[in-house]
Length: 107
Length: 124
Image 1 (cartoon, rainbow over the protein chains, first blue to last red):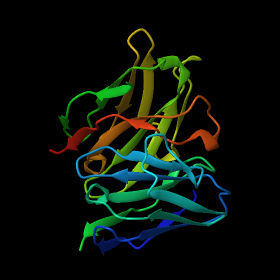
Image 2 (cartoon, each protein chain N blue to C red; image 1 turned 45 degrees about the vertical axis):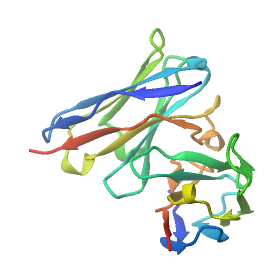
Image 3 (cartoon, each protein chain N blue to C red; image 1 turned 180 degrees about the horizontal axis):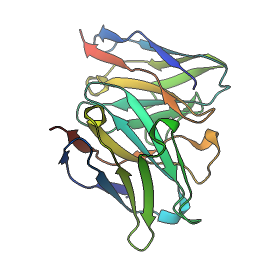
Image 4 (tube, each protein chain N blue to C red; image 1 turned 135 degrees about the horizontal axis):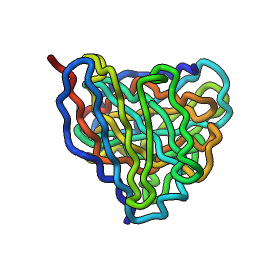
């Protein structure tokens, strides 16, 4: 199985900050990388697919980049509703696997 | 709008089975594969398997769950089911159904809509 490793595991940031979350795959996955947002007690929500394509209805302050083994999710200006846990997921091979999550907390 | 509505929370004893349902609405049920993903308390997300709602309900399960999980569907009610047997305490988790795409290759394994989750608690 492909291992997905996110960094950092958690971060504290203020409203308006630019936030970057990294995701590394244990082998090349081309651009088959998706990002999800999960709030406490809620189901995950798809934000970005194919590494950089914004899911319909998702704010443009979210962006993704990368290919191969290294990927990044960027929130350009953190808003109160963005405090959540973020997961990357590879869709290159079966089984699809997720990173361990990055919790974004209020500073 | 599309919606996935899951059955309610369950409490089971070790060794028992649980069957969780997921009723789809607001889209053509037979046009999209359905996945099941679970999340243990305070933990990350774990993919369990996929079911094709059309052609004979073909399935593909994660190796970890082979022999213990069964996914089925009822096209007349637009509902998919996930049954997990021989439950143990480590199976305590929230179980989600998640809609995939209209294809079954790995590149199609992204999840654009999720059910609200069903908490399954395994305790003696």
